[in-house]
Image (cartoon, rainbow, N blue to C red):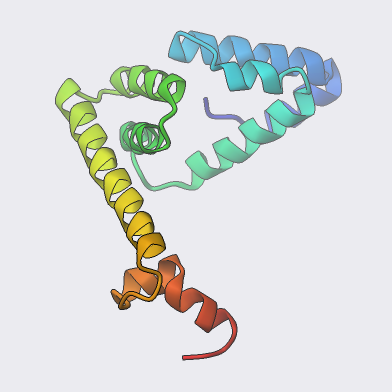
Length: 153
């Protein structure tokens, strides 16, 4: 759901936090067919829901990535994070934004491959903490980062 900032702020001023949050949930349900549980819980504290939606919308509004691809990325991240509810939500939304079944399966396969590699890489570092550096990825993911933060090379 994309949010018009000025409109939402005006609505909050005129109708209050609770009513604005209720309206946002209704719009989400109309657009996506369901309201994610996390949004319903956030709505118990309307300022949390509304600030989240404003932030999320700001990211979407300034993005040069097409909405379908944003949903496919969201689907891949949801799969990698093992959030089945998020996968369902973003899959349905991706379909509504024109994604094909083949594209959905492909991003899930990519997410699975990357999640698998991450699990293996982290586990191998625990098993062999004195192992050799693997270059950039080790520097980014921990080994070299600690040295870099301390100013060492």
